[in-house]
Image (cartoon, rainbow, N blue to C red; front, side):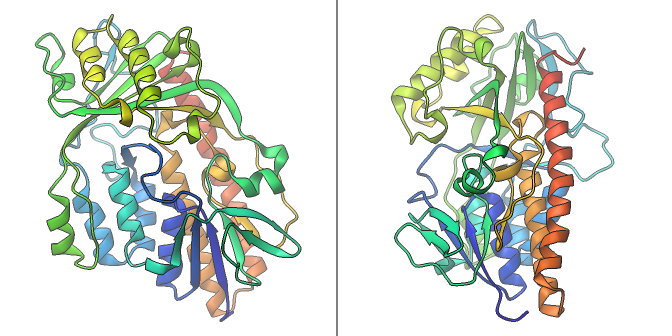
Length: 400
């Protein structure tokens, strides 16, 4: 099939990884993103890319860009310790999906989300259209905001947990609010200097489990990114990111926010210092009884960079009838971040779909390629959602 064209809705990690894989295979592709810029919203900071995610990136990226990804990750790559709210060690509390020392698989890498997105954008140039979302898809074809769509294009909905195409074509598969939220932010590196803190936490890494919540810490020590890109992949441009202390609180809404409740549109809100201060106060209130240094870390964070996200979980994925449409990532298998599987599962989706669509150039019928992909999508998504649900229960002490 020589004339395949793919329209990817959403320029997140999964959608861009797919675009890279298709471009490598010589398949025409365009990506449409409703946000005007990559930094329009606070979408996160540190990502743990596991062996599955690394394999997907290696498959889809050109060798120089994959090498740039590898070298752009944090040089502080220790998982840290597990502690209770009295800072006593809890070696058995980790999620089964977290990489621990001595694991047989390749070690997880701590990537800065924006840096990874910049790497995934490299070389795509005019194929990525910011400020143009999807208005719908029906028998008349794809409708885009402000742009004409390519007739006969294969549409891939990679537009996240609030996917417009999922709402239109799979309204019965709406992700469910789990009653869990995440507050995350960044503080200056070295913020955790309290002498009474365990050594792992002073070094900036570890997990603290409180009643109904967990605090995740990761010290992000990044190389000088602009010269790194110039040396490894000269056509790429990476923003300079200072080292930082990443922190995230995930837990039951009542445990994390107390009497506060999230704004109705908190997940889609742009950078907002007033909202950030609200979540900052909630984090300080939660962490102060554990140790003053942890509350001080939250207080030292820029409120404009603190965000709250509602945690959703997807139901079993039903079948859809719209021809020329498939899905990827959180659009159909939203999950708790507790297991660290969301981004890695989306990257695996991208690898699977890119590889199968590449086979259409050697004669595999498109319908068969999509059928095989969607079977794997269901299996992979169901497994990841289940593991993430178990991980959330475990870190919040609900696993029996």
